[in-house]
Length: 323
Image (tube, rainbow, N blue to C red; front, side, top):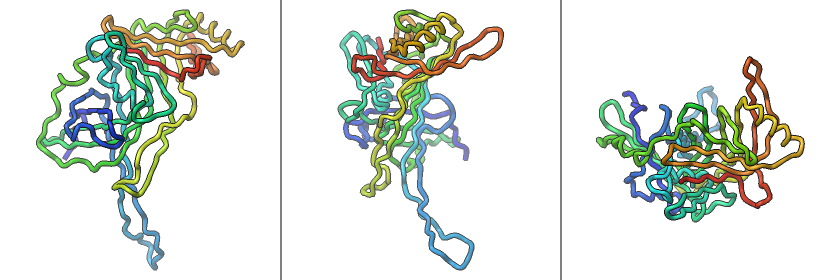
């Protein structure tokens, strides 16, 4: 029986208690994801019996629950409704290490923070409902999910993000007769943002870029124990390499600015604005550039990696603002 991977629905809900489903198994916050791959993939570990016997064949092993891998690729969408509202995918931002500040009737601000508690950057429960070709569905669930978030902004495409993390193991649900949630309920019916006329401001000057990628780059530290039904207790996001990314462009004036920054070890402000006239998303922070590369051809292009640094204000890394 084939698994109809193109017919599935994903929901994410912030947890009040780490590892506990806040919905009582009735998810509602559905988001549209990309691709055919599994979004919640339960993982088992084989426990081997390595006893020596007088034959070549091995002895039977035991399979024990370990964790679930969670991969959520999706388009970037703006605020849920009015100014001051969070985006419907704010659960993912929190689980990737962002703190949330909602300013009534103004903005929703997400700031990458170093120390994570359930009060600041809580974990989430993720559901994946998948439809089979006999009309029945199966629910996959993972709790205490945390992970990394990477944004991909390429000219003339929809802006997208990919969340990659881990959570606790739950056995796949029993097959049932439930139908996939209607597509009209996804993402609060918000349209994704097109990367067109994307404004990139560096050190108070605006430049044109073809593509840009940036990510949180946490180390996902697994806390495991033997007290529960599975070995993974929860995930901790720990400082690893610096958050950052890379940009590709053919604007020589931007290259000139970067060459100047190399010579002075300059730290400057980066700001990326995506807007459709109704929703605006701004990603910003202080950065330094790393070694660039340049390709050949009639139109030369530059690819320059960068990292987020403390520019002297004591702020941590990335801030994302929805208006």
